[in-house]
Length: 238
Ligand code: PGA
Image (cartoon, rainbow, N blue to C red):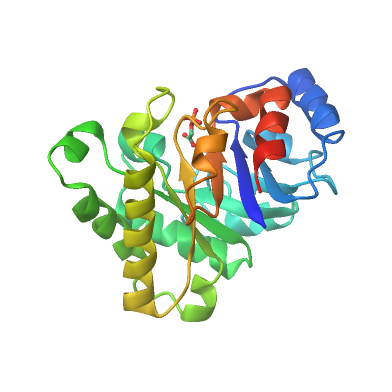
């Protein structure tokens, strides 16, 4: 079953998100595993038996003096099952580095939730043929995580230049990159890992994306904010 992750980012007000929940609950989600990642305050009260709840971020520490942060343990008490870590917006705009990301993954796994680790190259790196090197470096945060815990890690391959731009790599490029990620993790850790594709996924391109054999699901930003578009995408996922 494919994993469909809706990343709301910093969008929707309380009335809007409640309306969204109502609409999503009327969609047939039985053929996919749907994860909704609203803004932090809406995690309380947004759980549903129609989808899983996800968080867009998590704090690096167990507890204590870290103003404005939320711990993995706190999230786990809100019925959160999945936590996005290392989204490119956090890496680039908020200077998150591999060290921070590694700590966050450890916190999430310790609290029994799944981690969705985002990786991806920017435009310049892509054009200079550095994609694999970038991905390998971003995946190095998985070192020292036990194979059992690794089974709770999902990778989201999101080329930064594709996020919110309407531009996607070719199907062959996506296939090759996902294959590279899966093989690298299998060779280094002996684990079969699931890889999602993210970056401008929409009702218009989902049919094409669905032809790519090694995609295990999608991380969707913009289009996921619109219940109709999300429903369209879900209906086309096999
Ligand atoms: P997008 O965002 O679908 O709007 O491109 C994806 C993401 O940033 O996770």
